Image 1: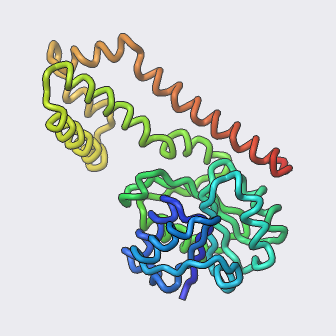
Image 2 (image 1 turned 120 degrees about the vertical axis):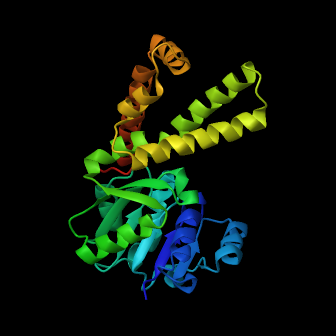
Length: 278
């Protein structure tokens, strides 16, 4: 039976633990978790999901098939260093840490082993993440299948070259916040046109769900779907003209490019701090 050890007990670890157990992929007695010092959080995960928690590193990672790094990126050097003695060629090390390169992880580990980087987003908490995954050449087909199975318990997965992970971060990693930003604006607009806030929120959420489902199930492009809604001289056209006057599409394109650039800058800074040349 596969044993998974989580180092870090935050929201992403919880989302993955929940997804893995709900899918019955791995039973809770084979899941171990630890963190730096927040025992209350570990007690919560134990009571909520029945997983094991420990501060004893040998109990945590010994014979673990998979070790998932889910601490803060700044703590990766200390985190990997603390388990280095327990790592072997059979270990599959998975990181969900933004900006920490595979090469950095390999050098911190100090030995040849299978390493994967995954970039999920916060929608993993409701099983709707869009996760980009990159791996090193040591990852076997069986391990690749295991990696995909783990992250598919919390949503969709896409395997990419590591050089593309910054782009994935800017698109789907930060993406939920872009939609929340749009919803904030729609909520303010709804208030200004006299709608009840609760009613407006319900309508906005259902509209988003409907639009997402249309894109997921229709063979039409987003442009075609938009054009289908936009009757000449109608209300939608009037609204779209305002968006175009503010060049909203260009703003979103630049928004994503800036997020990608920031992801790369953060990664370079972490690599420099770890004294690793990407």
